[in-house]
Each structure stands twice: as C-alpha cells, then as structure tokens.
Image (cartoon, rainbow, N blue to C red; front, top):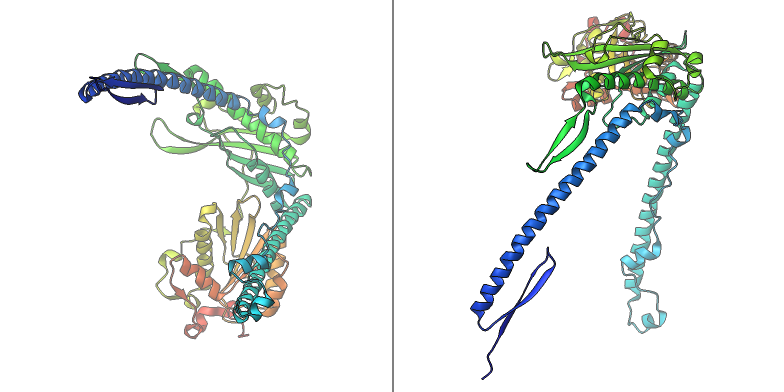
Length: 520
C-alpha cells in the first residue's frame, strides 16, 4: 500500500531562499519547517547586522566627505564669489510669468452639464425633449458666460499685479541709477542678500549711504567661533558600533576663524563694488559685529571685532584670486584684535549715521490706551506717538526702526520709519494729522515735498478725518499713502486696541488751531 506524503512550502524573503518540506505526517513537516525557519532567521539576523555595519560605515564616510566639503567652502569664501556677477539682474526681478489659468471651453461645459446634441428628427418624433435640451443649453451658456467673466477678471488682476510689480522694479532701477541715496542703500542690500554663502553662514547687514562723500557703511553680523563647522571626520568604531565625531584641533580653530572673518570682509567689499555698477559707492566701510556669550559672566554681548575700509580705485587693483586674506586685510589698514577668536572689541573706523536731532524718546501711548478711547480727545502730541506705536506693532516682524520726532507742529515729519527690506523698504516719513475737518490737497502736496527733501522713498499721511477728492487725485502715481479715520481705527482694532473717533466729544482746548481745520 503506497505511503502518503505531505508537503509545505516555506521561504525567507530577505535571504531570497525557498524550500519545499515533505514528510509522512503533518507533525514531521511542522518540525522540519520550524527547524529550517530558525536557521534562516539566524542567517538573516547576521546578514542584517553585517548590512547595518556596512551602512553605518558608508554613512560615516559620506558624513565625513560632507563635513570636509563644508569646511573647504568656508576656507574659500572669497574665491567662491569671484566668478559670480554680483550686479542686479533687473530683468530677472521683473515678473513675466504667463497667466496660467485655462480659458473656459463651451463644449466642455456642455459635456459637464450633459447637454444633448441637437437632433431635429428625434425631437420631431418626441424621442428627445426639445425643451429640455434648450434649458440645458441655456444653463451651459450662462455657466460659460460666468466662467469667462471670472477668467477675464483673474487675467486682468494678474496683468495689473504684474504691471505694478514691474513698474516698481523699474522705478527702483531709475532711482538707483539717478543716485537716490535710499535706492543706493536698497540696491547694495539686495546685492548682499543675493550672495550665495556656504551653508550655515549668515551675514545680516545694516547699511548706510552718505551721498556727500559717496561712502557706504556696512554693519554686518559675522559668525561667532561656535558657529563655524569644525568637525573633520565621522569615524565608525566597530567594537562599540558607534560613530564618533572628530573635531578640528583647538590650535587650528583660531586660524580657521580668522581666515573666515577676513575673507568675509573682503568678499563683502568686492560684492558692493561690483554690484554698484553705477559707481555711486567710492568708499566702502565694513564693520563685523558678533553676538556671543561672555565665557566669564555667561552674559550675551555684542561687539565689533573687525573694521576695514577700501577705496574703489585701489580695491579694484587687487587681484583677489591670488591674495592672502590676512596680508590683504593689513594692506587695507583693517582693524581687529590681536586674535580674532578672542572676540576683542574694537572701535569701528566709521559707524552708521542714523542720528537725527529731531528724534526723541517717547513713552508708549498704546500701552496706556483706555478701552473705547476717542482719538479726538487725546492731546495731539500723544496722537503722534500713538501712530509711531501702531507702526511699530504693524511692522515689528520686518525689523523696522520707527522714530518719533520732536513736537514742532510745523507740518513737517512726525514719524520716520526705516524699513530694511531691500526691494520695498527704505526710509518712510509719516505725518499724523488729528483733524476734525477734511484734509485738503495742500497738506498732501506739502507731504510730497517733504518726502523729496528728506530723501525718503515713501510718504504716509495718517488722519482721524477724511481726505478730499483733490488729495486722492494727487496721490495717484506717487509713492504716497493716505490712511483715513475709519482705516486707522480698523488697524488699531486689528492689533487689539478698541478705539473710536467721535467729533461730538471734542473740546476746543484740546484741538488747538493747527489741528482744528474747518469742517469740509
């Protein structure tokens, strides 16, 4: 009598192995399969372990290569910019993107609404409802008309936004090439912001330009020693199955740090001179500012650790591709401590000049603002400070500097805003008018003239009242903005300040002659 045999297929996907186990009984097959699976599991564990070791070694080697490449990039900060054209590409700044929304297609709308095709014979035989087809066709035409209207509005908005952006770029270019001081600062700021520095390296800058002597001062945040990459190797330790990081020797870190800071100084000067193709900047002053922790006290501090100036003509004679950064820095009579890594503070050769004798310190008004405050009943001096506080809150995330001027009541400048944005920022002057009557066009004309005299790129008039039609007409095609009473209240309420404007509560002694214009 023939003996029956049983079989079972088993496999290990990781090892890529397969086997058919046979036996006279199911118990025999189970024992054989379990034994084989256990052997495979042990082999798989060892294989995975070997692969993990290999992967760890490979990862460590890759990390080492990346670390060495990053250090090399820092060592070549100056060389890395010499082959780059640092001038602004005005065309690239413009928006020439096509309108990428597809135009509505009537047949597609008909298909979506399942509009049947016209069949006169079938309609005559009443196999298709002529009325139903006509209703669906009308609905399709209506939907198509609405879609086309939306499409046209969207395309028009795209083109208007594009034209506005491109006009701003052209105005920026014209102002720079005409030696407008604010535009020169913005241009240099944009050049430096566009510079491709090695990963992890920051160079946030504050910039000031003096048209009188064509000098530009760059106050740049430079890295502290702890910010530099100092890992030179990722080494796998097989006995402990760990990866250890090997750092640069302490004696080499100081030399590395000094080389990086001095190269960054020379690179910045080179980029300014090359980016300023119109030649408005004849002298560049670079001040390197570091934020660090005092190891003796544990307190944060900020200090200028390097300062250097260069004349355009002499600087352009230097072959930066062949210089030693230390020797070049000394030839330019740059200033620094004996050891840069010691972060010894020095006196800058020249500092940014943002001083204006009109600026005053004034306590915040918003902090003490009463709930439901009527802006018309507050003293006009407090109203000017309130406007400053509002601008501080509105633009705090952009790092703007907002100053209030000494109270003169001369229809001059009440608030000055310094916006660091390289494209849309610059100097902005603000006039705060706590009026109860209509702001006439003469006040707006004066603001525009003041803006020109101040060398500002924008002017803003803020009032508790309204601006007349002539005022609105005048500001068209000018960099002036009018903020009227309701809009001012809206801005304040958006920032959590419940205020209102009520003329009935106004007392004449609070208004005064200058602010109490005749009702319009």
